[in-house]
Image (cartoon, rainbow, N blue to C red):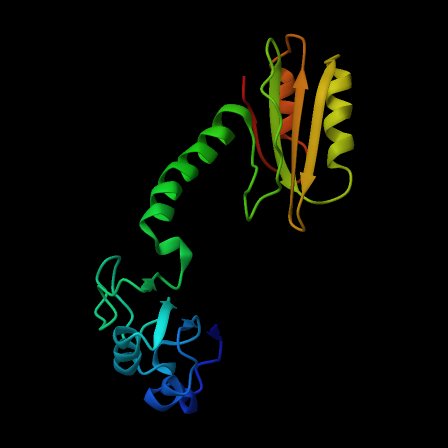
Length: 203
């Protein structure tokens, strides 16, 4: 098994060519995960067709495909070759999964406040509650905001049944579940907490 992972230094052009492939043991496998120009593709195709090499796996090409399915390579159609995109997210399967994944995450945030797997926002995942009210409070990550939220909830005599906090260096995200009806004034009070970015009542 020969696995290539060299960089894109121009001196690596055709690092593996007819001579190097001829020196391989019969039945060897070649994996190129570095750059397309590192391997002489025409020579590779000939050694694969002759049986000198048992197989090859390639995810880089001298001329990268413009889109899925637009490969142009002498390796196309060879039964002992696996060709894949260098970026895993470019596969048809990945694109199909992403098409379902993203809307589900958005709906999760809209319906329950969950932000699991968010890359630029604090992560919270929690079960949806029955017969409860859920408050979502997004704020700058500074000291005292959580205390201010709870002070207001206490002043309006709201009983907490669950509360969740997650932060990143810039933002804090608090979800508070309460089990009683609330005075609409509490909403405005929570919105007016210093350093609040956004507040909403989920249900």
